[in-house]
Image (cartoon, rainbow, N blue to C red; front, side, top):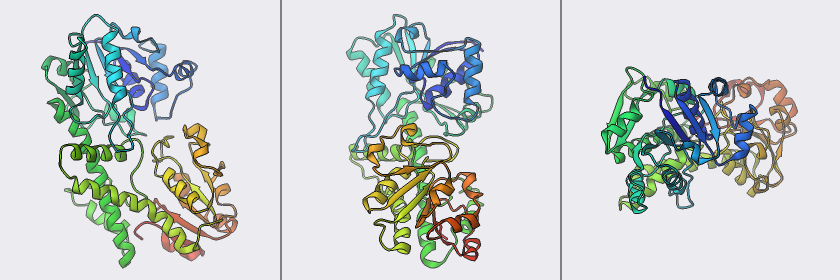
Length: 436
């Protein structure tokens, strides 16, 4: 296999760093470019910008071999043959994806090189972006320097390195077959399905995939809401329908809903794209509505038991959007916290991997009065109730006798269904799960 000179724009982000380190592991010469010089200094000192299983060892190995380098100088990518765009596409208030970083990154590449290269967009971008960027380059007289390819990522946080080595599929969209082949041949393991298609198809595959996963989650959560009305148990229901091979057991665990940097953002963006095309996204809008209801349901369960939340002391266990990560970006915990504060509650929070708003990259002034503590028992001490919002195994293994003893009111609202309701009832703990 040929060893390539590769550049990664946004090379210290969640997707960029995994992409850079894994491609370097394959023997390629990789330059990871990032404008955050503090992050670059930190990683050169051995400080990872985020946690991802197996990534730190991979970065250490490839940097020591000289295969992976980090830079804030765009000219260091001037000789790269393939450059991956892994910058952020955050949601605007309208739900539209902000792709200004993508355009800026591609323009920056084109303006700082003489030889032509392939630029592959891994960032999740609205349908039509690759075509739009190509036209943008033409308007600036730079089309001879860059050939665009769409190559969406499908890496799950907490399993990103594994997903790179064992992908379910690889999708490459291009108008020039040679450019698409260069990207496809970089890291395609034998036997992995390869879809070579148009720019638009490639971009929509990513959005449709995430929207379908979000739909499965909202579907099972709506069934869970019905279970609470009629006395059903969503755990049993999920098991029963998940055994059908046409459905499968993945993404049908009822809970607080989906959140994080991908599913919710991409769902809103796709709804906006439907709107711009003059089409109503009936199912997708319903998926989003159910997800909002699910978050509000956590608060309503507290209120149903406690009456008012004004001046009530509430402990929150879990701030990350998913156990196994240290990512609080767009987590469901954030709007739930704001809701609690708006209702006058006094809130204490804890998380297994994140210890402060500053560490999470969240402005603490947006959550006035929220106190961070280091353990779930501290968060539960003297509380009128606790909310469980992340499925950390450590929470599932809590000493429930101790928990009951230290709480003012033994009330648990569990957004992750970690416990057996009958067991907690026998202990004298009021327990509200999801769909149980």
